[in-house]
Image 1 (cartoon, rainbow, N blue to C red):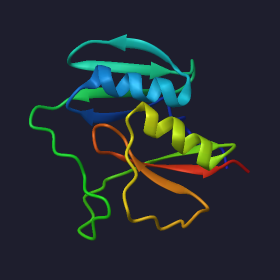
Image 2: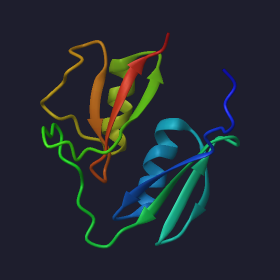
Image 3: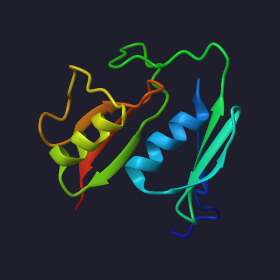
Image 4: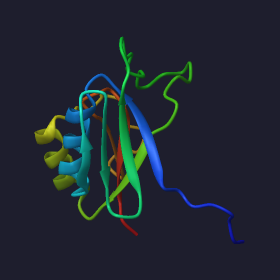
Length: 121
């Protein structure tokens, strides 16, 4: 089936958009195309991730049976363990709850958003 649209951007709330853009720039290698106190953006030239400042930002909980997570990003990597090292060095944290065992890894970005490192293929 052919869609009528394509994904061009995902926007994430953040207490510090420039810092979160820099974090994902380090993980994905995408160019920081905009960076100000209120809004920042990275892009691979086709798809972008924007980061908007929200006063009194409250990070989602992980895990959260109440369902306030809202969304998460799955990032495909060649080596989950090596990618985790890079992410942790860039400022991510690893929560205790890991539903994927060793197959994939849940990490938390510096603003509190969960994301997953998944093996490619």
